[in-house]
Structure formats: structure tokens, C-alpha cells
Image (cartoon, rainbow, N blue to C red; front, side, top):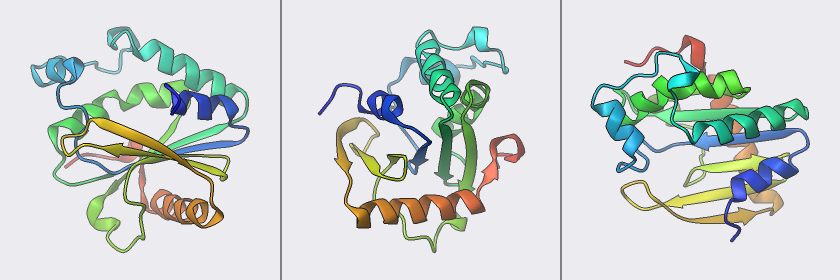
Length: 173
């Protein structure tokens, strides 16, 4: 497995990149999350973002400048976990970099046939599944290109996207 498969997928994408997130917690030992829990807030100010953010912002900007539409949908439990509230606080930066982001409360996703894990899909032709440990650490990734897998992911993502609320309108409960 390549060291940075998401970056490689974005580098090859010609028209679309979609990201479906379905966990309520990721990397709980992340130092930035710990700072946020201790009261640090970004207040919509890119200058306050963690140093690693710059490389992601640049990648998103380069990708969308090539005409690739980047959409991120998050299925979340409400009330939100602290980790998802942290993500919501940071999402202004994703949007500013060029991503379209929507939020879907889990109860509105109950009747959608969803893949079993988070994923990226590029150009409706290849899917990168990400597998996590129980506490939210990435343990593996897997590329899949079979038409049935791609169609399952495409249909699931589009249904989530249609039902989800744009970031600027989503008010966490």
C-alpha cells in the first residue's frame, strides 16, 4: 500500500473526489484535538490552524483548480461527540480550500445501504476504503475497482449527499 494513497488518488482525479465519513471519533490521541478540548478555538481564522493544515489546503486548492469537484459528507450521531464538534469547528478551512461539505444526522441515514467503512471515491471508478481500529486509528486501506463496489459507493454517497445539510447551514445539536 502506498504511503499517501488519498493524496495519490487526488493527484490522479480528473473530475470528482468524494469522501464519506461515518465514525463519531477519529485519532483520539491527536494533540490538536486535545488542545481543542482544553479550550483552543480557531474562530474561522486560517492563521490559527495547525501547521499540517497548509499541505492539505494546498492539495485541495490544486485539485479543485484542475476542475475536480471535491465533496465530503459526514454521517454523525446527535448529539455530536466532542471529536465531531472539533471537526465541525475546523470545517470552515475545508470549505475555504475548495471542498463542498455536508452533514447528515445518523437517524436520517438509517435506511441507506452504506459501505461498512469510511472511503474516498475518485472519478466514479476507484474506491479507497479506510479501515480503523475500534478507537479510530487507521489500520489499513484498500483500493477497489469492481463495478459492483463502485456502484454501491456511488449510490450510497449520492443518497447521503441529497439528504445532508450543507456545512454553512448545519447547526450541531
